[in-house]
Each structure stands twice: as structure tokens, then as C-alpha cells.
Image (cartoon, rainbow, N blue to C red; front, side):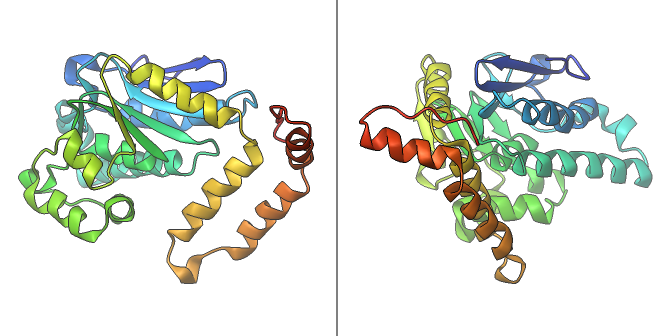
Length: 264
């Protein structure tokens, strides 16, 4: 699949859509053109009914994403107007990942720092290799983290761990990240890709409408109660019960066979 920049690779493999941050010389630090490309690639993936899961990862074997590409800041953040434009583009990319209509997995191998951790937190799940490290060094740089990104961190690890991550600005090991719930699973570096692909296969075999509904209802549950869209959630739930996939699931259960879901 085409991507607007060669620094962001978009690839389809079976039912998996791969988004690969491709800036290995800078530990896959994200440049402005990469931020701009993320929503475009997601739109392409979501328009393809064969794609059931989306995996975000980094090129090479040293980093997932080690933050924003600071080498561009002189150009892209040299005035209040450019700073605001950069913030708008990057925030839109984070939010677009979080709002993806397919389940998203961050496959983390190596450094997952700053904006890289923000990308991983925007995904539904995070699977990491042993030796990966995580952190938000904002306090070392004198910058502030936005509300939406902060809320995703708090929703994932809770307020106490979120404060520890921000206050210390240090790097956390994969063991520490696992202990605080920052990542879902850990595997060896050699087994990471196969492990993630097996997870994608498990998800892909399930009813797409049910998976999408679960994703939406869980996400809505993390919103403040006054903004919870109950009608939206109930409509999706009713759609599942009225679907061909629900009938197929019941029939396959009775016939003791694996169901064949079509997302209808």
C-alpha cells in the first residue's frame, strides 16, 4: 500500500495492516511528514474489509519510536504558528490511532520513549520484547504533556504510576512496565513478531462486529460519565445481535465447528 512518505511504511499481510515508523538512523523518531501520514494510512486500512487488525511498530531492532524528531524543531517549531501547527498535526495522529476502527497493537522492540510511548498508549494493546524500555522525559526538557495523552497514560496505569513516570522522567524496564500494566505481554526479541502475528490471528478469527463493539464500549467507558454515549453503545450492541455473524456463531457452536465470520 502507498504511503505519503518513505519514513512511514504501510504494508498489508493477509488480515494485518502494518504501520512501520521508518527512521532507524534516529531510532524511528517521528518527523512532521510521518505524523501527517499516519491518519492517511489508517484511512486506507479501514477502507479494506480484509484487514482485521493493525500493528504499529518501528524499523530495525533498536527502537519502536524514541520520540519526536528534534532535529526538525528548528524548522517545524520555530514560531508560535508553526508550534501550534505541529501540535495540531501530532495530536490528530494520536487521536486517529486511538479512534481506529480496527484493533490496534503496538509491537515494541527497544526504545519506546516520549511521543513513542504516546503512540503505543494510543493503541489498544502493547506487546513488547524483553529489554525494551519506556519513559516520558518531558520534565527533562521543560515541556508539558497534553491532556489527552496524559489521560491515556492515567487510564492505562492509574494516577500514581502516571505521576511516577512524569515526575522522575526516567526509563522503565520491561519488567517494571509489565508490573504497572503499561504493556500487555512480554516475549523474547526473537519471538516477538510471531507472537504478535498469532495474537492478530486470534482476533481475526473472531466476529468483527463484536470486536468493534467491545472496543467502542470499553473506550466509551473511559470517558467521563457525563460524556458517555449510551445510545451509540446500545446501537452497536443491537447490531451485533441482529448480525449474520451472530447467527453463524450460534450455528457453528451447535455444529461443533469453527465459525466463519464475515463482519455482517
